[in-house]
Length: 394
Ligand SMILES: Cc1cc2nc3c(=O)[nH]c(=O)nc-3n(C[C@H](O)[C@H](O)[C@H](O)COP(=O)(O)O)c2cc1C
Image (cartoon, rainbow, N blue to C red; front, side):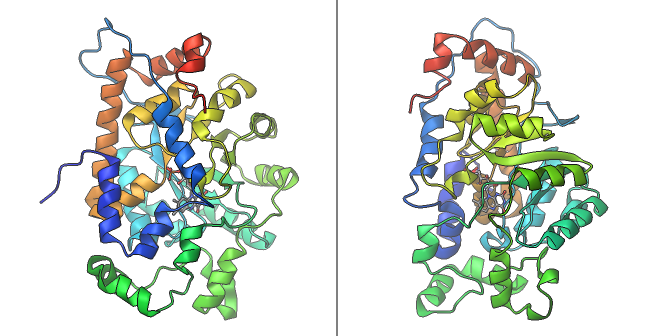
C-alpha cells in the first residue's frame, strides 16, 4: 500500500528507520559540527515571502522553467550524488529514470555507483555529467571524452572539494570502503533487514566510472584509496579555463559562494554557476547558500543563469530560492531519503509532492508562471522588504 506523502521530513524519518546507521549517517551527515548543514536550513526557515492577493490565479499555473537553452517541466532537479548506491542499491538509475519521467535534470556524479554511459541511457534527455578533477589529468580527459561520446550536453565541474570533507559521523562509524564487518557493523545490518537483503542481492556498491582506471590493483581497498584521489586540490582557474575550452557543451561551475568567484566564472566562459556549499559537507563554517545568493545575483551579468542547492526541502523553499535570485534549484538529500524510504515510487512521489507544493506557493504569491515569480523577486530585492524578508539576517 502506498503511503500518502506529506513532507520531505517524513521521508527522512522513514529512511532513518530503514537504513543501517552508517548508511543513513553517510547521506544525512555533514562536515564538522554540522552547523553549516543547520545554517542552510535556518536560512530557508527565516526567510519570508510576501504573498499578493487579488490576482486571478484560477486555472493552470505553469512550472515550466527555461535553463541553458531548453525548457524543463519544473524548476528543480537532482543534484550529483557520489556513492548513492550505498544508500539504496540501484539508487543512481532509479533517480535518473525518475528525473527523466518528471522532465527534470539529473546529474550523474563521477563517483556514481553506475556508469555514466548507463545513466545517460536511463535519462537520455535529462542527464548531466558532474566531473571531479582528480590528480590524474589523463583520467579527467578520458572522463570528458566518455561523457561527450555518451551524448551528454551539459557538464558540471564541482570546485569545492580540494580535499574530502571531514565528516564526524562517518569517522565515528568508522565508515570506510570496503565495508568492514565488525560486530557493531553486523548488528547494524541484522537490525535493518530490508537494506541488508537488497544489498546482498545487488552486491557491494562500486565506483562504476572509476574502477576501469584502477588497473591491476583494483581490489576493493585500493579502489577506495583511488577514489579518494579523484578529488584533488590542483583544480584552479587555469585548469578550469582549459576544461572550458575542451568541453564543447554547456558548462556549470558548482560550489561557488563568493560573488567575485561567480563573476569570474561567468567571464571565463561558464554557462551557469551553481551556488552551493555541498550541502554543508565541506566547510562547516561556509555561509548558507540562500543568504549569499542575492549578492551573487548582483555580481554576475544580467540574465546569467544561477542554480542553488543546500537545504531546499519544499515547494515553498523553491519559491524562496527563485525570489532570492536563482533560476534553478537542485536537491540532494531529499531524493536520497525518498528512494531509501520507499524505493522507486519514493522518487516519483517526491517530484509530485514538490510540484504540488510549488503550485500552491505560486498561487499564494499571485504568480502564474516562474517568470512572474522571478520578476517579483527582482522588485522585492530592491525594497526594504527584500532586505528584511527574502534576504535572511543571519
Ligand atoms: C551523500 C551525498 C553525496 C554527494 N556527492 C556529490 C558528488 O559526488 N558530487 C557533487 O558535486 N556533489 C555531491 N554532493 C553534494 C550535492 O550535489 C548537493 O550539493 C547537496 O546535497 C545539496 O544539499 P541538500 O542535500 O541539502 O539538498 C553530495 C551530497 C550528498 C548528501
